[in-house]
Image 1: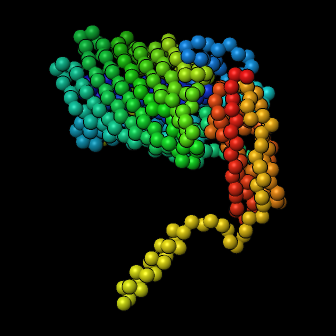
Image 2: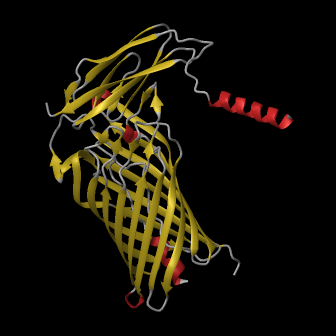
Image 3: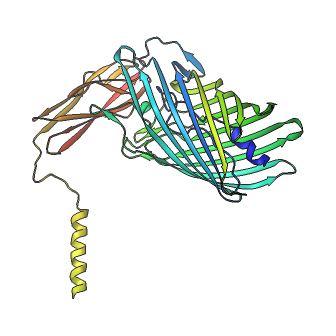
Length: 308
Length: 113
């Protein structure tokens, strides 16, 4: 049963922080749900995440330019994950996302703001190895990303900027690898998660293709007191340049490194986690608006429906 | 024989459904989209340029989009700006009340002026 209890605690913000110059939090990706469930177990994960950015970077340097039109950008996002242990070692998952709002502040020119459903990801996860004695596990997952809309949002017959559009408007492929090594004698666990998202282009929007994302997270978890677990996450996010039908978008693509401290508390079947992202390294192609801070709250509820 | 008639009807139906509708025959286009022009086709970062769609006709609607950046205002004249160096296409689609439409693109180059 230890196997069941450990996994829900990890919350990884897969931000793909900026799609190009003026957004915080792209429609691509959400949090990372990991691990398989025992047969006929169901897990609900609801999370809220907020991102804010008001500083531009060029390469790894902060840009000091007060004339920039976009003063800040922010997003409020709610995600829902449903995982179900279909058979032993195999779990099916659905990830859904909704932007309460995504906005850009253009100073005295006003704001752009939109809300709506982002994408759904349908996952299959298979547990290839689960050695209880050595406390080692390996799970692989693959899925497809389905946009809720391929049509960009218009207001007053004018298309809103790409960075406030809630949906990427294109299908994609997602793969995930998950390794776990436990050290129960010192109440510590290591998790390594690698996630790749490959995006297709949107024929309704200049054949725009968001860059592929390669995210790797290392989690170290340590029991602090009964029911309270402290987690430190080291996360690398690499994003390729976006493309449209006349070429690459130069102000897109990045390489980011974060440290994210996280606390998790369990109330029986329900777990609550809070996470704050601290960027420690960033490199942005050309010039892009960088996330200044972000945080997330996560609620996980797991039920055993097998009746055993 | 009946089989061949059914096959023929099926092919005709497929052809009709598959035909691309080139023109609204019942409601012909009542406007001419003359031009799409910008006061500046090259601008600096964060600078604004006016883009104007010129069309003849009545009760026309103007729909705007761009590959990157932001468009302000609406109607036949808008403003465009972006905060990084690139080349952007701005598209305007003019439509009449019969559902006819025509689009034109214009490229705006944005650099460190």
